[in-house]
Length: 184
Image 1 (tube, helix red, strand yellow):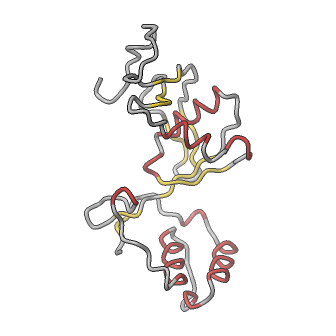
Image 2 (cartoon, helix red, strand yellow):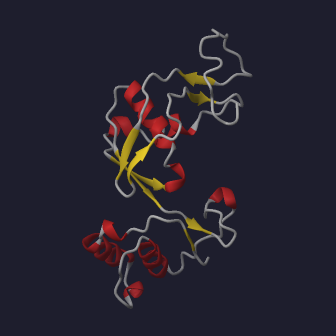
Image 3 (cartoon, rainbow, N blue to C red):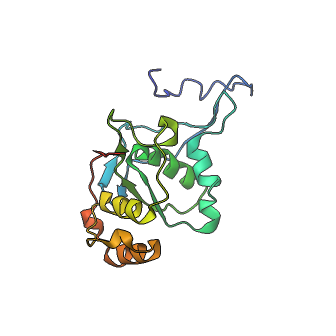
């Protein structure tokens, strides 16, 4: 099906089987949502797509797990901040939330930090470990990666001082919207 589910099995009344995925029959088409950084995002698929809840390999799907595992619904999460690589997963998550009659949080998707070979820094891509012996320097670099201005020599302060300064002076208008390569 070319990576996009066409609804082929929707009305076949197939019996449950370990070799089959379990899908949520999605009747909540999400045309668009407003991201706090990118603005209005329109659904590129232009149609409702049934959402995999459990893959045929037995693993529960990300779109379900992130809503339930983090207990977002019960704890009243109102804002979700995550990487821009998950921007289009938001349509499925909003559909699931609407199906569960749960409130939909505000989303903000941040740019990704990319390695020299343009892969995102992550565990799955075997990113190098952060040197925790210099927390101030790492913290300042992370805040500056978000486009924020930090005073010279603040990296020598305690992490609490750095975070307090960053929170007090944070300007969301400075957050870059494009993925960027960084030095490890």
